[in-house]
Length: 424
Image 1 (spheres, rainbow, N blue to C red):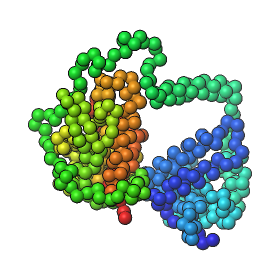
Image 2: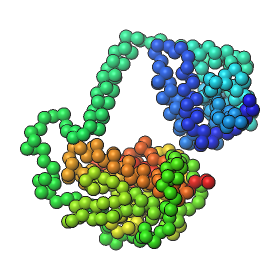
Image 3: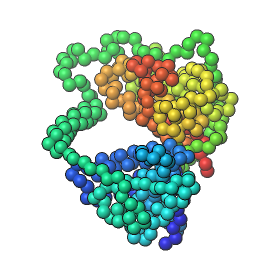
Image 4: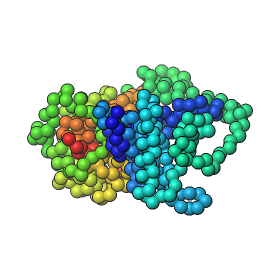
């Protein structure tokens, strides 16, 4: 078998998140669980893959014939607690069980030593569970010595009591979340039917279909969809290409491409009588469409960098604020760092009352489903023009809401999707 060791590529992501679960494949102490170890290792590894640092590195071992990733090592720069000197640290090292005993681990350890020497480190450290005897034997074989030994005393009675309490809390929260997903969900309290009346039934006027454009606001007319020659890729090819894309080129989007993406997500087909509903390119329960589409523009031809809101009823961009560093700020402070190099970040906010006016409590189920429709349309439209996106549901709510200038109560961020051009 011909093996080469190389730097990590984004296409290795799935293989590495599978391999890292090997680190819990031994007899654990009763106070440790494989699930807990796997969740933590996967989370830390995903962060490292998303937020590359010049002080750290990930190397993979690859079968040159099959191009299969069969091992990896993740390396970090640390500071020794006692000496204050910088040193290398092996955070994770794992080998596919099908090729164990063939020298793959040795090759990865040798690569770690090369990396450490190039960094000027005179020592390389790692942690290993005492029960992982096989790994300890390998490390000792290749010259690693025991240094600090951690001792632990577990109060099993207290841990059992705490665990039982937290298990009940987790079960209650899980049941509540599942209940919301069911059809016709209502609060736990019993409410007589005559009191369960939506504002629509009560005759309250419908809320606006989208936010008004402030008087004097700067707007930009987008090209009409019939004027745009994009999106000609056959749908089956779009489905075959669809991936979550986290790596973008430095290329700009054209104004036509931005207009196409906005229309694909929230373009308006029809406005209902008395402006109660809209039919758009994405489906929404009862045609309520409770979302506003904000765009953090960084690289779009003809559009000044800044934050805009897409006004679908007029097919316009409405300037919220100008600034060239918003993508970098979001990547640094509010979400995963890969968003920093996107050409534009789609940020959807929700105005819940647009749904609650008709559907009351069940809006909590419908709104998450509907925003999924919006984002899937963005995925497919982006692929059809040689771009890509990766939906993000984990972000700093207050920071993003504040950046957009929304109150976090009657309007708040619900989903994020950076977009950029991709290789190939």
